[in-house]
Length: 446
Image (tube, rainbow, N blue to C red; front, side):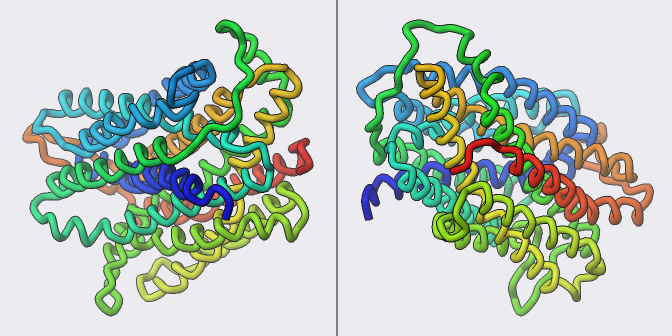
């Protein structure tokens, strides 16, 4: 296969970012912050909202900065090579629970979370932009994008499946377990990011503007395909964000804690692992599926319909541990749709970047791909923030007392359980309906 080594290297980049750091942040952080770290539901929701406002500024600026980078390592690769170690270190610190009071913990959480978002932007925006300069062949771009998704979902599968067993191996308090796993996964994420930077090549030279200008930012909002694709990207991450952010609460409060079947511990990470391996398989099949149906837009639409149908189906399954395999089967079927559309999204960003270069005469690849990263963080974190707020409205309360202990109270158990179930199923289905409408309006016909 052409460029096989580079495709493996490119896959390692999202294995580190999407399969480790982002996966843990998406699925573990809401529950970690409220039940382990000791933030209130309101603090958790506010933290994620503030971080998103931060990203609205930093992501496009990073994209513009990356586009203008010139070095012996290329335009985008140096950000991966030199950002790898800070990326792993800050992630490890984010999973550490300091022995502070309520105010100290709040300051620590806000500081580290914002630092993590900044380093994630500095690494992941250039990483995404690499797709636009490694090849100008559209089929190869689809292949690179497919390898990226397989890498992310394969590592996500390993991360989520191993998480409860690694916690048991570490032992001690939950805060100690998370701290040790933060170091362990932080090291792996740093190595994967560095390997990606060293194993890939930049063949296409960006057509740079002579000096910094706000014109590329203005041009973005005149770029109709970019507007639609950014909204679609936000929807895909809202869809995943709702499901991952509430999965821990679903297992804990709707299924009454971890379910053990024939020695297999099905906690919230393992529950979502079945979806990860499905996404990995169908992410690899996505290019062939797209070729079979004839266009990216049509393939994306079919994938969205799959997600809608099975998300709604999930809602009607009883909240009972004895239905665990039915619930897992529906998660698997839903993930077929997610696996099919995920590689398409990044391939379509490359199409939009090519469209912008042709229309405007200068490259804005980094800026355009930064919107994909911003959509990822915006959709995931806003959905996580909404989950925290909705659970608070339903009757879920958490806080740190004066002794530093985390206290969780539920004032209306039935209301909280119904809200959790709807957030995992009906809310994502509604988001997918919006996504289906937007992809119908998306103007690039490839």
